Length: 194
Image (cartoon, rainbow, N blue to C red):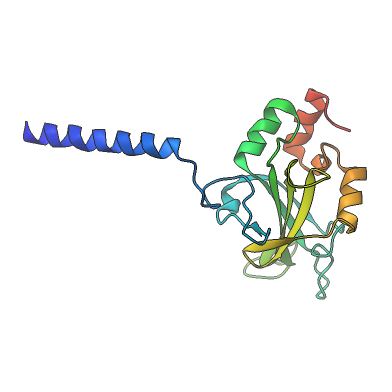
């Protein structure tokens, strides 16, 4: 009987803790998938972004400074991640919601290592870039940030070519959905594909 009471008390404590935590959104960017900025306006890199929704990986795509070919002749990989909430919204609507955060992780490539003697595999982190939709913060609704290999990113000036390139070539809402096969069919089905 004593064990039953202790078990019930422990269960009640866990439920109360879970309910209290559910009402309190986390301020820690590693636990909340929208964009967070520091006092200087720099974007904070979510620590858990590699647990986000993986949209696609490209090899040797050359449309930005981080993606340029390395000096060793190997192309670079780019991996694109979407925050879970933005991804779910896109699946429902074919568009990106306000406060969308997309991360581009660029990695070096190797072709020889361990048992691999052909093809390419990903290796060292080159840098991370972000595209953020925040309609109240940015006059053009979208902004780009460069992290390099750090944990906070500075906004890339609006005169940089990424702004005009995305505006002209983005298949959906300023983004390159044409390179994300899992979202391409969604955008076409929802009629948002440009």
